[in-house]
Length: 588
Ligand code: F6R
Image (cartoon, rainbow, N blue to C red):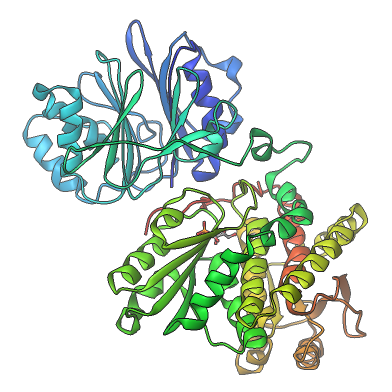
């Protein structure tokens, strides 16, 4: 869950390029950072605790260099200290590494290395890698790197440099790593936005592959040593898409982008949509898998498939899917939903599905991500870079695609497209400054509360769960989502005078029931915030949304996203980088 980035080329400000690039990867980890660059005196390392985004370049001396690498950390092994921040050296500071992932057998390796006379400065698993390479140095840096990789257990993305060699080494097993090609210069990063300013031509490093970057990159299979030829892929994102622009935070920028992203998401090749719909129709059983917000999208979609396509699909949380493996067989279909395409739990679910002979389709935002490449087929949601940790525009784009697929399953693709295009245009009208101010007033009322609840039914039950995630992760207010009907089975005991409760009311067959549930809460003193196309007497505060029929989850979640954002800002939380969370969860 860390961000790594390296530069090698003709420019002389390599370390500055790496620092600026790391700022784009900060969403992957932001408790500490560090860079290593080559200078005449050897390898120089600079590390700090804190966010790299807060670094003022004038406060740091960066001598000229044309090779540098860096890391933005999200602590797994070892507390947040300068010693534990990457890069990590070996004994004589000739080898330096940065690493994303976990070396599962690090203790075993560390014990062995200590016996061989190595001493360690940090508590990290990463430092072991630098010492391990050193142990093999008699076969040369490149071979020593290869040998060391063979001993590592677990998922990783690693970069390494040697003081006396004009080479950058990189390797991947399970954690993302991409090479960007510039003019006589190369970049290696965990994610594309790090180098978008310089290059849109990329080469994807696959699992169990390594790169030796000298003047040109050479790719090898880690296990067999076989040389690999790579295709250069041009990517559709540009540098501007990954910038905040006039917005104070990425989260609000991305919320507002939903004016466009829904229409963009459903602008898919009809053949592709029909292909996936046919797979669903012909599958022995279809599983929708995703984690966190993506998991809630899968749950909402299961109701949409029931309602629109009269079809049963099974929504399963990514980390729980392996326990269903006993049902999976040839003929089963797994649809993985993910923004990043790198979530470890979802990737593991895919691995299990493939082992059992199931077909895998992914619905992802990041083109070329592991999920995209590991699947038999994939649909890109085209939301553009999503950098705030809390998912917003990717969520609604995923909902849009899955709703469209439900229509496509019953040959009503045109009707689905029409509904979603109309919904996109209604969202455009809804997202205006007055609407934001209205939600800000509500945030003022709610900011002092310790808990709030969200209720919904059917598709909007899933959105109640998603609403709770949004509120929790950026406002740090305790929030829980419930199915409206479940209240009387326990949770209603939590309601007392003034407890805020958001009711997601869709204009469908669940309307009367969810309103009755809201009345039950109100009669126990609850403060009812209604998210609904119509105002109802029982609402203490009304957040108007357009009537979007089967696309109601898309419109209902948007005011909650704005509310969560406003609460975060009011409480002086950084909505883009909430505490304890990272955007891409690449560890299990
Ligand atoms: C919450 C959030 C997370 C992600 C989850 C899966 O706002 O963003 O819950 O949805 O970590 O990530 P992806 O979609 O990248 O697989």
